[in-house]
Length: 281
Ligand SMILES: Cc1ncc(COP(=O)(O)O)c(C=O)c1O
Image (cartoon, rainbow, N blue to C red; front, side, top):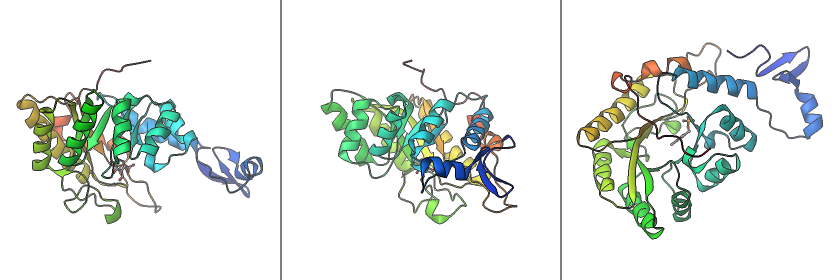
């Protein structure tokens, strides 16, 4: 729960953020100035992280949400990991102090330079979006004499039930591969000497306010992970998104972070995916 002075509020005629008068900030910093509530960000992150206390888990902050260095640093201090969608976001994550093994890299439009950098850094996972990308990463990792950690992005054909422009997991969206194609990608990937399969990834959209899309996406990914495991292909993690919605209207119903685990399928609950052991400091 946010403390009483968290976020934006008015005292008398003065607009405040986390108890600090905005006009004082404007005088000190000049305008235009962007002000964010660190207290609200802290509360929100802790709520989500605490909801998963019974799971081996990591919450990755999608830097695309806000790449302001102070915010990315704050997320790191809170214990988040990073989710980068471009080479620029990888650099922001590094500048904020994230280690490469704390960063995942997703995106349908990864360039050659971005992939080469991601491979050289040894990121926690590069989420591959197509068979062609798997082949490219394998060739690049081979040229670098290394082995890249790769996860496969699944398109579970789920309607996020939010705005169509921020729904990323339905059949018509360009993100990820349908389950059958994802299965084939994993089988191809495990045969490649310069790749290590580490996980499956699905992101079905932003501003999710209902359980159903989360459940359906997690079911699709979990059942594929179990099938692969039965065939001897062990994954380190499943990586599930997207983001929980906020209330834009006074009485809008949202899914509170504390209720997120209850939206996951039973198959994911008992043990949870095993995260990679923490390396480095
Ligand atoms: C792979 C991935 N991660 C993260 C995001 C950020 O969205 P959210 O914070 O709602 O999960 C997106 C948005 O499209 C995405 O595609």
